[in-house]
Length: 391
Image (cartoon, rainbow, N blue to C red):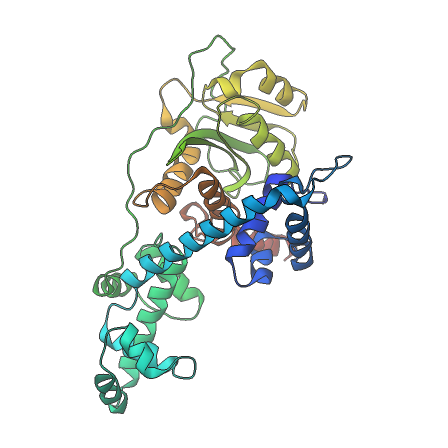
């Protein structure tokens, strides 16, 4: 497959910049996003100078920063509220066992005053010093260490991982431990992965446009990139109303190659916008199957004409009322809503858009372990394939 220069649109740059203000390590964030640190700093500098007038594209003028002062103050307030919520949630779950509290204090004696840590963590300093004098066996220390690692992985995954994926993460860093033991430790620590709920996908199939056959026919396993892409649309509730998420997934590695988050349901805002991102991120090969449901956003003349212009694409649509014909796209929405949305309080549209950007571009596409890929991350899967091809 030939290489091409990555092009980032205005929305990607804005969300990357906003996310960089919430992170302490900009270089690490740049690696997670697949860009260079100088590139991200350049975007930040432009955003700080021109605000919403940044990244206008070739031939367009940037706006003066004067009108962005109020926006910047509002952003700082939102950041402060977010930090407060994170601290509140973390303090409610973190360090469930007394031995782990003592271990944390010991490991951070050079960072914080012991008395202050004991007060914040609600243990007496006398009890801590008595614990410190006791001899801890190697087995006990290993158990404490593993529980600390489990807790760290659990919260780094934002409470999305259960015992199977946490076990695999432990294996990847050198800890050989059974899933049953991990599950037992998680129960002792009071750690539980988020549970799923039912949800409905929002598309309108009551229209007079042409409907095509189900060519994909649930052939969700493909061996090469750009042979089958699937797409769907769902709604997400915020405290300011609904936003609509459109995604395009390459079945080869289950990567979200195109997506759009919009306030409306027009073809331009949903399927067409996601498509434009997808073709920037991945080349179209011969005999590509593009599968979707029967929604008007996919059957409209505007969208169909765009697909037909490539002359390499075969359209495919699910049968009426059969959600299993597009199971991979629906599975992503289930994971998104389970891992990011259910159980959390309603937030603003702007904050939701930022959190979904982080979920897709950093978590799902780069860090999450996928059962369809034998619990490898998308990057690990592609690296394994490239290694086999070279060998």
